[in-house]
Image (cartoon, rainbow, N blue to C red; front, side, top):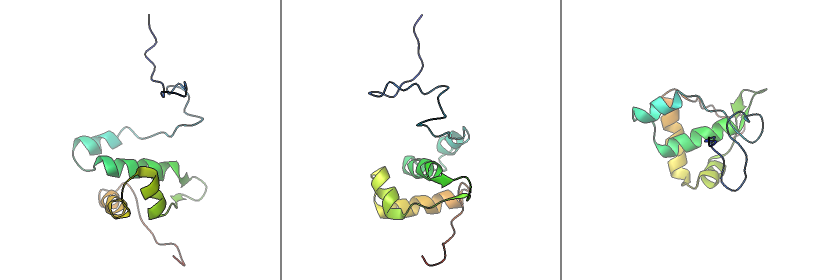
Length: 100
């Protein structure tokens, strides 16, 4: 019998059951947003990076548009559009920090 547990190529880190380190949990419901065409792949990438950068104690994520653009490989303009769409569908709330 073979082990079909997904692995990240090159790292040999097992994904299943090892969410404590090196992994972010993504709600299953996010895939419904994709299936229904409510968000795109770019918007999903931005959402996952916002989850990754979320501060549980403070209750928010604070990467810049430029940081998200670099991390996702998409343009700042597309990142702005993605965050706008994520807010429209109710996945995030945007709020300007004082002084920014």
